[in-house]
Length: 350
Image (tube, rainbow, N blue to C red; front, side):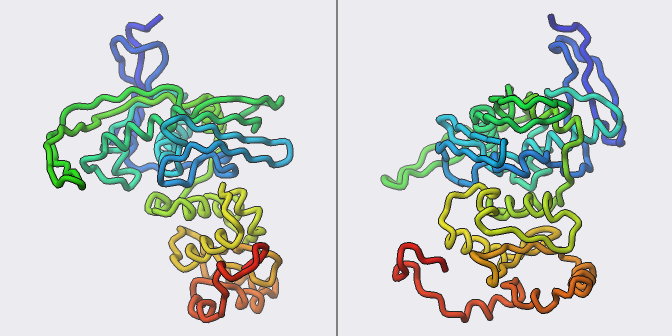
């Protein structure tokens, strides 16, 4: 039964939470996402497992990952799998839920979001295509099914759950104006009406909500939202979870590929890593390759040079560090002769 005077949890721009009476709301509080300065919080489970597609085009391929007794299966809908860029919405909502939890409050799973606040808060533009991008993001998040036996919260018995990252969504939009669309074949143009999303309400999954409410999260650098490469976003998440505050952390390239969520061949993964090394865009961390390992180790290390130097001296690893393929010796590695993949045998590893 609907409550006549349900209350809405609201974050005021002054930095305080208040409860406001809302007429006709469904039973349960509606969390209004209005935090001005918020720390980016990422749930640990999705940092560990590649739940989101790296594709920039529609991805309808079912993916499955196993580690020990943990299994994750991602089943897209006809509109495609939820992407690492769609995850921005979950980061936005989750960060504000955690902030409310830190204040001793109990925010609900249903959140109301101002479109402009979301777009600006996650470094997105408010262009003519914003309506279509938001609605497609919601469709993918709602339509992608995740089957997992990863326990969250205080559950002691492992069970397999099937869910979407969001249960429901409602979008409020209106006419924004019109724009010209040109047919590339005929050269003819026509005026089409454009929509603007004013706000939208999302109910996140209980699985995600449990993790947030139990503080199963880590803080991300806001520079994460500026990363335009899906691979770089995953590399940063993996580094944040596993390297954390350590000066150095390394991982086998094949295991890293699993965590990234790519099925590309090893030499292509190595190319992706090299692009990330050269771009040197990850917040907090840098990436390197250790060619002395077989097949290769990928090394993550802090951008804090003083902290890094102390660790290299303490572990007597300065000489080893100099042999790594790093951002500051790219030219050296470029000059090394590598045969094109087309002339290598099928089992070659370059």
